[in-house]
Amino acid sequence: MLKKMFSSFLILVALICFNNVISTAQEISRHDELIVNGNRLIVKKKYNEAHGAYDEATKLKSDSFIGWYNKGIALDLLGRYEEAIETYNRIIDLRPSSHEAWNNKGLTLARIPEKREEAIEAYNSAIQANPTFDAAWFNMAWGAFPFFCEFI
Image (cartoon, rainbow, N blue to C red; front, top):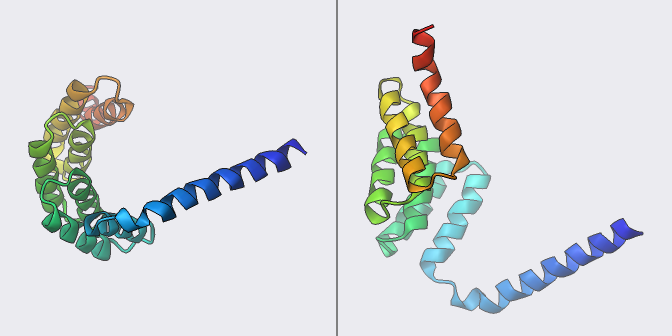
């Protein structure tokens, strides 16, 4: 009985949220529409199309943190690591204290064996920007592990 009531409550909350989205849908800009579309494409693993949506969004709004951030993710998923790194650098120029951008830059750098030390530096920058960002601590430890193994 309690489970059924909780399910009904969740459905009611979802409907209220949906109604709020519908009522503000007319206010969504083309930029935001492209971001949402890109996110849907990422979920569908259509990374090229998602990249195109994010690229168009950043052309409409050149200071779009979320546009550049998601574009970096799409480029990384496409294996276009150098472009992803350039994109994360763009985000860091826009918002130097973005621990997420520093962390993702580190993740992308870590995919390139000769850039793993730079990855650790990026994780360190993420930690300096937000010392409680657990993902950066984990990634730094994991990224440093091969270096520690050399000394064992």
